[in-house]
Length: 597
Image (cartoon, rainbow, N blue to C red; front, top):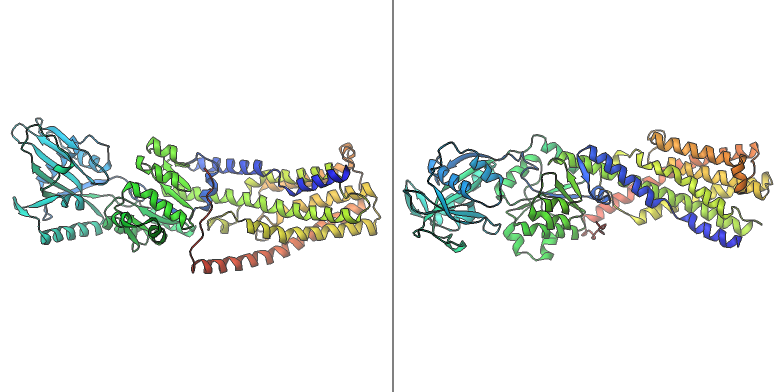
């Protein structure tokens, strides 16, 4: 029966029993810290993915820019200011009844009293959709016949035009005129101006019933030029995320030249670009091979966002997606980390794992740090617990083969394991090395195994040396041996936690006060237990002072050995990391396993 209980205790002792509790505590504390920074974590496990994120997909408007779109000018096709284009745009924006959007708001915000005739009325409407990228209304007045007014993306409106207004007369829209208009739109885009086109066609019916097919043969009246400058600190925020290994990819429905101009001004490479038409023609495999190399996705249909996110995940990236609209919900679900904002559509907020209290990448940058800090502390516990438990259980299993008695009985093993895990509850408060915040964190079972095989046997060597000293030098009896080795095992496990929690020297990167204080308290309790009535319940006896002094000396030597081995371990790990980085540049990355939401 003793052997059976001992074997079961060994199995339990190998297991980090408090892992679920410690992960929950660490994640909860991380979420609390992030909430103070304006980041609400709706699903705790998303913090681990946030720490692993190496690609962030985001829209342009309101995230990279100020989000306050301003109508700068209304011009005719020749680029000259036109009151008529302004009047037509006001009628279109004022009478449209679809979803509110910042462009229409910018147009209607400039309406002056009496600028729209009181007898003007809307007869019909063709709502905006993302495939046409234009909106048409039919407006009539007391002395004006019905007129179809179309407003939308410049290219999409020009495609349905047959003429262009020049010097108050219509001129056929031939290839030369079309090229001149395209050049003008490109120049505006390269200057950071977003252009919408306005076109019209008289309608003969008194009460027209129109459809999309009626958007044809229009006459181009002119353009609306909007500006939305980048945020003042966005360049620094983008640089900060890139320093942390997070590559920003812009997914926008805006004109390619506008997006490219913005990207180049804030430090994002604008040379690698895909348009919505190109994405639409690609197979999933082709998009998979191109997505990782592309930083700008422009003129994108909302339905294509999910495909882009899926392609990036397939390429091995941990993808965050920042969106706030109804059409962003599929992409938010597909991403490893769905991120939305407080003022987003209800569907987007429900689909998101993380909600920003304000639409600001600086807040998200702080959230990435908190996610990585939480992930790193979780990995600390797993690595420390597995290595310390592995070493101690090897020692006990080996000792049980040669000793005439069990080195520890089951209840002593379980008490040892419980006490050594108690300080780990405070590991959520521990400091994190700056290097761990500069790169995405990933689950790596092979790294945990390597950590365990380096430091576990070292603990076993000191345990076996302690056995020899207790038996050969002090001729310790059964209860005395168990009491002394219980104390030595506990102190070496606590020393392991304090020393190998950081790759640097312990005196430079000190543990948090709570972690250090808890470890000292548990060590003091472990040394004291054999001298108390509680020790008798567990089969312990008082330890002679000379043996206790030897145990303290062994622990100090063990700490020195840990520091030495740690230097070689992390040096080897750094060399392997650089080798893997060089190899990864020569071959595609394997797909990362996604943690479930």
